[in-house]
Image (tube, rainbow, N blue to C red; front, side, top):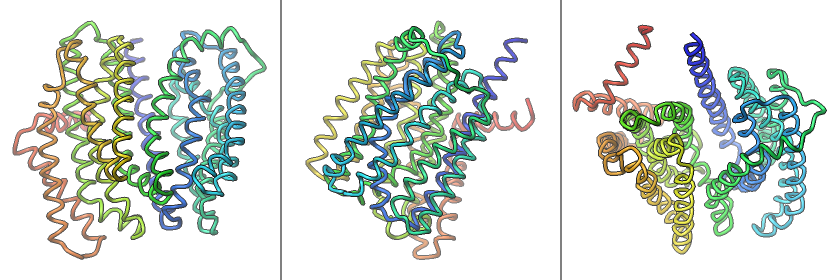
Length: 484
């Protein structure tokens, strides 16, 4: 009975966590569409550039100790309060660094307004530090329903603030207002929804104990954060903020699809693989199913987005944002490989091989920097195309260790993925041809028609070719509806 109750609690927690991620991103997606009609790509790019530096600073503040609180066998009020005060000290230190660095950042990018915006927007480090402790408490208690509601409320409040400021002609400050309103409102609402409050307790010994675990996570997270933002930093410096805004907007659409699936996959696969880590054959079967299903679900959505990119951007964002279409299409290809990456890395972690995980990350980051430096000598589009090519190569890098660990290497994985990839490409071609034949008809008719054609083509072809993933998902859906 205890196991049944725990499984139910875990499943409920996963459900609310996925709802929290997709719900918040859904609201943010609608808000950004409205803001795109009120702001220019240059204004969007300026805030995107600033958020790169704040995200890196936030990594120092939030990462490591929050996870250490979750992983600790017994975490009491002293642990939570000690981390709270320590992270506030870190936030103050990082704020001071950004305050002093603001003029240098503005001078480097030759954008005078960056000085004031960096100094104002950096205040989000303080509520961010509080939120990280609150989220750790929620995770330990698995009270994700409260986090879901709090995130939705904060997203709505920040949306109203930013849209109001943009409508009033505040320009780039509207995006800054959105970030500040989101962090502050989320912190306040979480204080209402979550029972934890900081106490006047402090233990350096507890912090030192958690630091021995958290510093590794901090280093890994910092490495990943810096790398993920390198392209934005280079585009903003070598080209201009307008192109950076277009690149960021182009990445947003496919990332929304891939990141939501990634949240679900990571939540499910790691504990599932870990529970069977001594059963190599079972882990291999579970991983095959995960890769085939995720490829079957994600690839057609991204290839459909690739095919309808011009219609989607023109309808939702407007003519001035059409420059982001090439970026959007390239990033659709880039994110197609995410399900393979996630599944392989989760197996490596579940098998207890963090040493292999670290080696993989170092290899990928070193080769990524080399690819970036090559792309710089050509054009911004070459940079992003090479990034997608490199990510494809990384599927072989991430999969290589699992050929030895569980007998499921890169060649066998791609053979499992190829049917979904081929069908998705065929569907993409059909949708693009249909769009060409439709000509200049109303986008309100064209885009829905393209989506219906793509969905119908993919489902019908999957049924005709008797694809295993299609029938597995259909059977699962039937059982869920029947309550079995």
